[in-house]
Length: 496
Image (cartoon, rainbow, N blue to C red):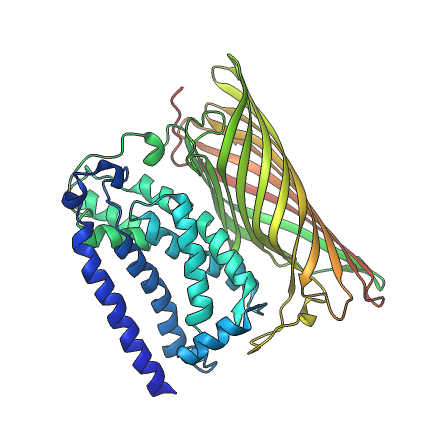
């Protein structure tokens, strides 16, 4: 079997190398200069061959890891062949038992590689989403002997597009085509770390060292409105669960954390139909054993339409794409969501503004930690017992924010969803539902003009799970968290 795997490894590597070698000459900027419609804002021409080659390379790397790393090689999931490809395709999709971090972070990140294989070669958001979808299918059917996983396909494609577009735009904030010398080196290296597919494309096509003009539209480079807040603090949580057996107060110790909140663009000032001209990103790392990556939240616009625009007010409809990953010591939840938002913004003064929003949402595939998830029906090679359910359902969202001098000093958000379990606590006709509510608030007190301040956050998570299995019945969970932090606005840009 190892000999067969080595055989296919060599041929896959050769095929990818040939695709890249053939594609790279066609990707040089000079050869596309005659047709400006095929060149993106960064001077990169469309190159389908290079995009496909990079997407295949994104599959090849994890396949090599599965083949050569002992802990993965022992599972023998890399022993692929045309027979395994046919077997997977013929059997169709099932559910897997990967950890919450793998399914809700690693797979979306892998999807961002497929996405940016297209995006870095001058294709737009929707082509990138197609690449993420096809790339995920190719991996599920042909990259491993595991049975194809429907949850991987959804999280890798839709989640991958959200991750990928944010990485594309944040790498754009780092890049500067007009920089030279050491500054240019560090900017290109930073973009490569943030967005490997894009950095690889710029190296192959020569754009990484070519000095030429930056994008004209600030939305493609450095948005006119940009807020990036780094916070370092301590989290003080408490959590309890109630069921038929009584109330259980669980151990959820206080710990230090750091996070970064990034707001790019403005919903009120959207002036073109490009997805993610407005987006927000929250990334949080915890100084606690076992769960260092605590949270990732992405929100970006797909579509918008003005409903009214006055001298000081703006109201509009916005179709939003959201992705959430939250992995704490008390609960796990996340997944891709689409929402139609009513948004209203008002300038209170030249330096102060207020906005609120209300949304109806659809959770495309949510994950939520559950008492009976270990009963999940998982086909094929079982690696572990899953601790969370997969479900779908409707939701609502409410939010408000007050900004002064372009900085969010007060903001709050409430989200509710009702998930019907598709896989997990659903065995032999006995299912479960999860009613989830989450409230988040933040207040910041600026102390210096340079952006330094202090703040306090409060978050409340409530889960009400109903199980058809009579011995479990109804379970209620409530987790509250106070966060006290110092913060620094790293890169606030606002031009009114």
